[in-house]
Length: 202
Image (cartoon, rainbow, N blue to C red; front, side, top):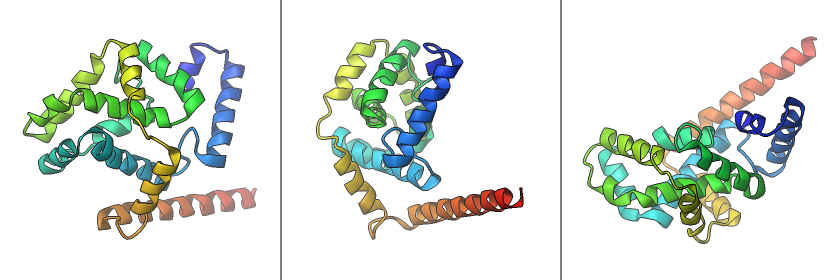
């Protein structure tokens, strides 16, 4: 994000914009997740949305082939698609991100998978699927079409995201996901204790 801001702003303006994004994120996670637990849940919610909004058949195909969506989607979200899609399209995403928050990350990710669903369903192995996703995204030249496809996906409300997260943190959450969320929570507590002790010793 800082890299993108610096293309349009000086360093001082970039600093204040990033600070505003972080402050807002701490208030309501509008722009980004603020800890490991939320980061895991953000990704798991995306997997639920793929099943709901793109194709339940594709979601099942990912499971059958052992394809981990996090292997490519986490790179999309962590880097705001920088290095994954043509660069000028990233600027369209950034522009929308500043108005809509991190919801646009879901929109674009879903639109990309929806656009190549047919190709992905024809591939029998996880490695081939991941290569196809990366190749397709990197050659998606028309940023206007990508944004149109992204906003054609309806009923992406934050209340629905909260509902999906609530399901994930409840009894429907798999043992492996519970372990990951629990470990992330412990890591965050340890980090907080470490920072508190470090500050207290100064």
